[in-house]
Length: 470
Image (cartoon, rainbow, N blue to C red):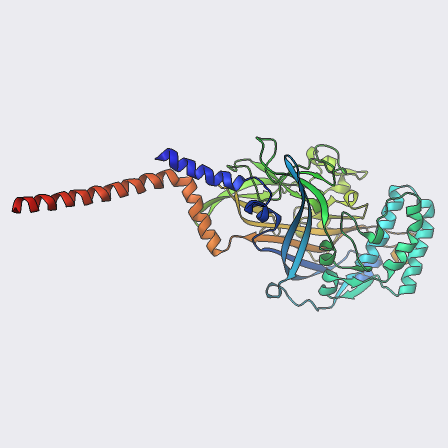
């Protein structure tokens, strides 16, 4: 009896591990997320714009949340022997019930202009072509005058998230042609990593959902301790993050749908392509969720700590302290001067000191994933990142030659998902069936046996009474 029951439980666990086969239900669920995922943006305005341009520390004001239902659609291109090739696209559907007004006017830095100027500065420094700096910066100054674009702008959240035409981009794309002629890899329309700006307009949501990203190559089944089903093997034909040296360049990791069962490791990793690295997860504690025992893993609080040797290979600055507290993804995005940190510079006090108006909170800013350890099912998750623009003084542009050095937060994005009421109940039942199935089977079997025995005894007594009467 126990052998049959344990075999049934093992079959449930094996099914959750699965194999990605053409046309299977598991493959369809993997390709199109079956459960709702929430993506909420907060945007940062600047209260002291003129003083900031003159060298003062920026005073930031936070607006939000602005929430969307996040979808991920994967288009499978072909199946190979042990892997499959696919492209991926994100979709965003606005959720007004969880959002504040999208029409509030905010004072913000003109992000497309700042990123264009800082990008030009980054390219000139990276490829040692400062001798044409005056030409490029004069072109930028001229474009600002022609278009009437201002460095501090009034925008609505809807414009910042879903797109606003930026006239200066038309001119900058022309002015940067000489740099492309020198062989410098400047992307057209400032698109990078498969993301493109269309019609010279910019918005965070519209850019993230602008088109398919890929191709990715993922494993279709688990092989021992080497890799899990769903783990990424290659991105655009490359089996490692090319921007980093080992071990930071390791790519093999999953998207959170499959985990090695039972979940026992002290450390796990999560593949997030836009982060240009694996996200490290550290086991924190166990607790019960709807009678199901779950384990909480948090995003490693030390992932941006450059005093730790294992993080040094993520730094491409001249000094390690320049990388402390954040992750530059500039090498992964054609040298756009951008990066990310935890929201509100949580665990990065050195960077929080460069801005005013911020307070971090462990309860709100720490990312985590809760896993049922036997089934390996994600129960709750919250992952937050803060998008940063690296701002430096630009001596050739008069309006920007007094800027302070700052990693300026532009937005924060929190992605969250959790088991709904009915799913939570089913999870509790399934978890306890797997965890205590043998005991349930034992006591259930004993109960049924006792009931049948009692019925047999009663029937025998009745038969004896009838026989005695006759």
